[in-house]
Amino acid sequence: MSVLLGACSDQSGESAPPPAGTPAPSLPAVDVTTVLDGLDHPWDVITAPDGTIITGERSGRVVARHPDGRVAEVSADRSDLFVGSETGLMGMALATDFAASRKVFTCQGFRDASTTDIRVQSWTADADWTSLTRTGTVISGFPVTSGRHGGCRILPQPDGTLFIGTGDSAQPSVPQNRNSLGGKVLHVDAATGRPAAGNPDPTSPIYTLGHRNVQGLAARPNTSQIFSIEQGSSRDDEVNLLRAGANYGWKPDRNPNKYDESVPMTDPDRVPGAVGAVWSSGPSTIATGGGTFVTGKAWGAWDGSLAVGALKGQRVVLLRLSEDGTTVVEQSTLPELSGTEGRIRTLATQADGSLLVTTDNGSSDKVLRVRPQPNK
Image (cartoon, rainbow, N blue to C red; front, side, top):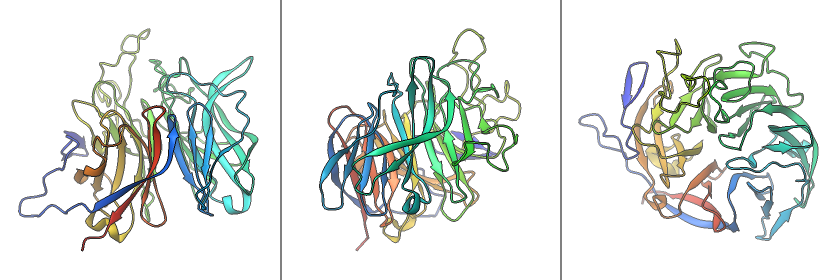
């Protein structure tokens, strides 16, 4: 069971029972169609204002599907991309002023003669989505070793800032080390990379700490609530409601020289004040990926719920949250994507209420469109 502020919810990955006497809201049927195929570990997917759909493979290749159906590779300088284990080209996002600036952000591994790290870089896309031209580094220095636990998700905000989720690089002291950018959610000015106004420490980009491997960030529409989606160790994948300065309790340094994954994901005994998860997978993990809030009347009672992708679990979990975001009211799983498409990495809500979904199986990967069908 998941516990937060004394509230509990079912963690099996299947539908939680409704309160006694309350019928469970039915899920809409969804149509699943392929938008792009022949991909190899695509991580993120973004949609430009003109309808062009862009995805990036972990190896660094960027592919665009134009509104007329034409598919073409987008050229970009990948000469210093570091690819290893779970790290490579990861999160991608459009600047909130993209229509004017044509600016794109990527979170990726980096290596040159003197440095290996993970960083957020900025690019300019040409008008036809044939090339990306690098314009600078927003923020760098996220730790990386073999590439395990690289993170790394970007969530642009209307005020011109970025939230950035990072991984702990499988190093025991990193999640609780305020001098390390690993195992954190960062909040920075997108133009300068400097700490965003209102950060707990005005000299630091760190917004929250004590995370293991943040794979998703999602802003709840019409609220100030932002949630991280985080992979657990042998148990307890988590969804966390972010609060400035909060510590989410991952401290795998019981032996300082060993990455000790036997400790709890949220460990209040060793991290006083550690904040518990809104949702947890419980005793076994499903390897959570990205998450997004679904929107539109076609989703019925599930309109506004948080959709979370699962890699190992090969499914999409829907979570109906309480108004304050601290508990799960009900959860369910989309049957059309349960084991049918393999590992689910990223979910991205579209303006028409559909979802774009990336799979993460290998050379047969796809970008899918998942469209809810209104009940008749």
